Image 1 (cartoon, rainbow, N blue to C red):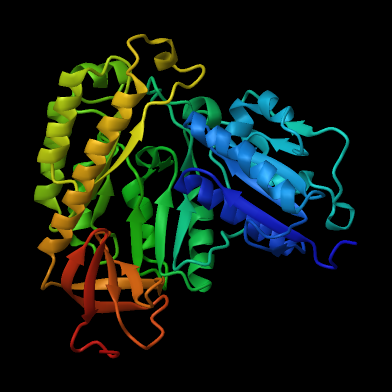
Image 2: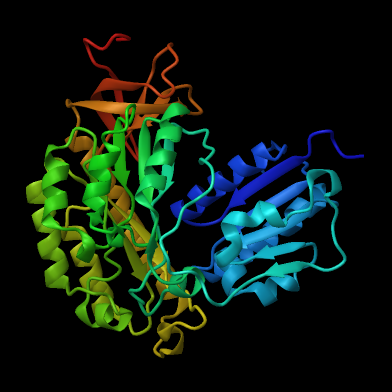
Length: 441
């Protein structure tokens, strides 16, 4: 017999944009009468928001379905996200999946579920899929449901850049922007729920435009929303960041001094093969300009290893550039052959053992650079938006430039923005105490 209030589990594989969309689906399911339970607990409904960036992400999807059905064999399983768009036929063959919802219908997934009272597994899976994806500006239903102090705010979708390794244009379609009034509506609702930091997210957010309104115009309007303390830009392409945005970041009290700017490779030949829109010199010029313009900028990047044709010299060029530039972390990931992409047809693949070795080398560099960046802040007073206690009982949170800070304090600091003096640093964490003059110090 089902519970009076059916249970729903939502699980996200992949990027911050997927997380934002899952949060919107969670909000709708709660309004429809579901009780949300954590993944791994018995449930009546599993909504799996998938990724197709790598082969591993697709494998994770199939594993998570099997894992859920082991403890909840009668659970209705709905799969959406990028893998549902690019691999619908493969998902149709996975035992236990009941509903497959492609990109065009994703945000209306709850409309295609049986009613909570009649939630039963069908004999055959239903597939809602369209090759053509809308190109028009869009609105989104509801307000993202988040437990964290920070909330993701989707402002854009799709991409026209067509990097040779990337399947996302096939999974999400052409670039399009969310209507400005709808972004502001959700921002106001998120603040009303207590979120002080909004993280702007999309596939290619630097391409956001609404009529004559640019990304900078959007940020300036979001800063006027009462209760917004911080606005953070998520991953953004270097060729889409105007000087005006850097100048504004340098003076704004609410726009975080943080940029995650994908590099992918430090070799011009590989960048050209990737169909990236810059040379090494152009990328370096942008980074130097950003660091000059924005004091104490927190700078992160993505680096791909193992792209076809990446030999020892090409990797050495990437390693040297990643070492020289003032990143304080590198998100390192391996090339994954994706169907329909230009890179899938390229030869001169890199041996998996070499890919792993290169990944380890870059990851070690990233850890060292993060520690050095944190150590540079010892003795400084910074503002930290606290989130939760860690396993040791310390309160942890983030600075505007993305340093994770831990302090010991008996008070409840959850969702509190406090001044902290940084006193030390360790791998992945800065240590500090509430600054003198703070009400709780």
